[in-house]
Amino acid sequence: KFASERFGWTSYHTYEEYNEYLRTLVDRYPNTVTLLQGGTSYEGRQILGVRVSFSSSNLNRGVFLESLIHAREWITGAVTTYVLNELLTSTDPAVRRIAENHDWYVFPVFNPDGYVFTHTSNRMWRKTRVPYSGSCFGADPNRNWGHYWNSGGSSALPCSETYRGPRAFSEPSTRTMSEFITSISHRLVAYLSFHSYSQLLLIPYGYTAAYLDNYNVTYPLGLRAAQSLASRYGTQYTVGNIVEAIYVASGGSMDWVKGTYGTEIAYTYELRDTGRFGFILPAEQIIPTAVETLDSLVTILQYFQ
Ligand code: PAY
Ligand code: ZN
Image 1 (tube, protein in one colour):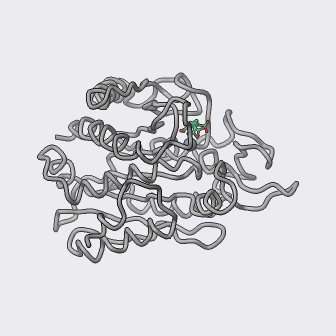
Image 2: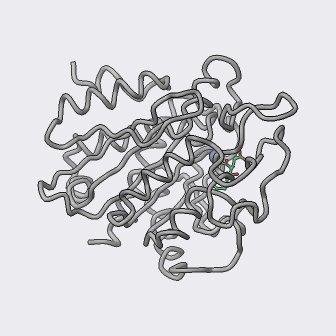
């Protein structure tokens, strides 16, 4: 059987299953898919990803997909791997165009220690698993990046769900992934970070409400993306900068990528739903969530056509 059939998107997968899936893609599409170790977690797990490139010259514009930086947001890794599978297998001309005109960097499990912990011990775990004082574990890996780190919306308390860590990049997972992103930053034109839940399409930054950089481009483009997402099943997304749409949150990965490298297109998705199931989104919603999300990605990447 093909890797994608064995894997499937009718149930949620473990960290090991995601890794095995990535490895089978490399076996099946050796000329297109390259396995990458982006980083390493505190407990020594590999943070694996793939590059998908249909160009032999390797000069396509790079698009980065990040998911499961927050461990309990299971739908996010399911959606990014569904999109990855579509990039490789879809016959829809619009999907083929975005697949083949970009080099894709897809890292399904950014926080492997936390994700494993949601399978073994506590389904609602969010953070890393680095031991801190007071017998509390973990920093919030989306408050730990070094662009305006500790500039609001993060906690100094190790037991808090939004603990920023003792310093920027204190967490091995965020530090090593930031180094990997630096190594490919000159190729990246888009950075897309996937969270759940709330149905939002968020624009930088999380540390300030100011409309910085190319907000005048990304806001209208975000509105069009939300429209195409809704046109599939009617799922409504709100578009806006992080501070306006939810709250101040400094130290996020997207803020760091956009703020450090000026990556033209940077969005954070808060996927389904709006709270009925929250983080425990039923597996029957994986495929519809992924399909509508892919519609919006097609619209976003039309920006580069
Ligand atoms: O950069 O995505 C961002 C900041 C906003 C998210 C965050 O707090 O990191 C929003 C929350 C998230 O996905 O982690 C929203 C969910 C519902 C939560 O846990 O509060
Ligand atoms: Zn999150």
